[in-house]
Length: 548
Image 1 (cartoon, rainbow, N blue to C red):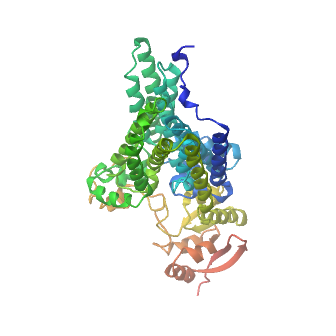
Image 2 (cartoon, rainbow, N blue to C red; image 1 turned 90 degrees about the vertical axis):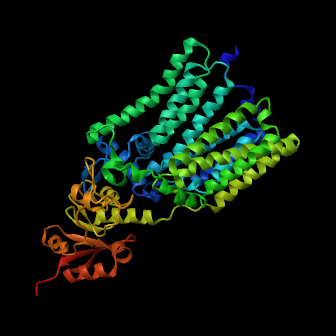
Image 3 (spheres, helix red, strand yellow; image 1 turned 90 degrees about the horizontal axis):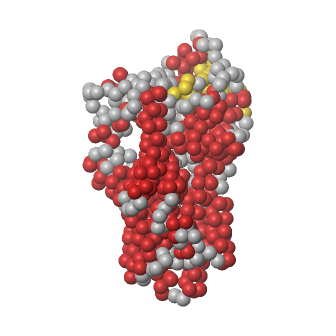
C-alpha cells in the first residue's frame, strides 16, 4: 500500500490504550448524562424567537409539508432559512414523535462536538490530550446549557470541529483523494447552512487545494470543495425568491426591517467599544487569553517540532486563529451582542489550551505520570461540571403546560387573552382549531414586530436605533401581525365580549404578567369567574358586565 492509499498517519492512533479508552468513555458518559435533556421540559422553546421558530419550522414541515410557522393559524414565513431546522431538529422530532424532541438532536450534536474535540486534540498532542480537550470544551460555561436547547450554537461548533478534523487529516496525506475533498466540502456547506459565517471556513481547505501538484486532480478537487457551498447559497437565494419574491432580501428583513434593511444600523464602528466592554465579561475572553499564553509554553516544550504531532499542532493553531479573528471581525461591529455568538470561538480556545497543557506535561514528566496528570484532571473537571450544572429554568415547562391545558379545557371557538409568545401559543393552544389568541401586552415577540414585504427606501424619520422596530415610518408602511393589544386599547375588550366567542384568561397571566392598571380596566368591563382548574393554572371566563 502506498502512502497515497493510506491517509491516516500513525500519529492519529498511537495514543489509544485501554486506560485512555476507559477515561474517554467515562468523560463522554458523564457528559451525556449532563447534556441529555428530557423533551418534556420544553427547552426547545426556551429562547424566543430563535429556538421556538427553529422548532416550529421543522414541526410545520413535518405536519403540513410547508415552510414557515403559524400565528393564530395564519402561515407566516420564517426569519431564518430552514436548513438548520430541517437537517438537525427535524430528525429529532420525527424519531421522538414530539416537536419538543428537537432538543434531543442538539444533545447528540453536543456529544459529537466532544468526540471531534477529542479526535482533534489526540491528533495534535501527546497521549490523553484528546480526553483533556473534550473535558475542557464540555466545561465551557455555556456549552452544557446550549446543548439542551434548540439553538444553532452547539451544532455549529460540532460542524466546525468536523471541518477542523478533516483539515488536520489533509495534512497527513501525501495525495488526498477526491472523496476527502468532497467530505470537507460537504461539511463546510452544512456549517454555512446552519450559520452563514461557516462558509468562510472554505478558505482553509482552499489553501490546501492550492498546493495540489497533480493537474488531473486540481479541477475535480476544486469542484468537490466549492460546489456544495455554492449549491447551499443558491438554495438560500431560491428560497428567498419563492417566499419573498426577491433573491437578496430574506426573512430577517421581512420581520425586522429595522435594522436589516439599513446596513449602517447592522454593522457600525460605534458598536465596537460597547461590544468590547461586554466581551471582556464573557468566558470566551478568559479562554482565549489562556490559550494565547499557553502557545509560547507549548512551543518551548517542543510541541511544534514533534515529529508525529508537530504538523497537526501548527495547523490546529492556524485554524483556531482564523476562527477567533474571523469571529471578532464579524461580531464586534455588529449591533447585537450576546455571549452565545462567541461560544464556538471559546470552545476552540479551550481545545488549544488542552493541547498546549498536555504538551507541557508531556515534556516535563515521564510518559506514565504525564498521562495521569492529563487524565485525572480531565475526569475530575467533568465530574465537577456535572455536579454544578443547572438546567434552564422551568418557566417554559409551565407555560407550555398551561397552554396545553387551556387547549383541552375550553371550547374550540374561544379567545384566550395571552402574553405568551404567539407562535408557541398558536401551536399548543390554537393548534388547527377556531380558537385564537388576543395579545394582552406589546412586548412579546411578533406582537412587537411590523413586517415589510419590500424595503422602505427613505424612512422619515429614520429609525432612531437598531431596535426601533416600530419607528413611525415603518409602522405606517408595514403590516403588524397584531395591530392591537389590550394594554393599548382596553376598550377592545367590549367588542370581544360582544362577539359569540367566549373569552378566557389564565391565572398565569392574571397573577404574573399583567399590571394593576390593566387588571382594573378588565374588571371595569367584565365579570371574571373560574371556569376550570388544574395544577397548571386556573382558567377564568370573562363575561360582559350587565348594563346598568
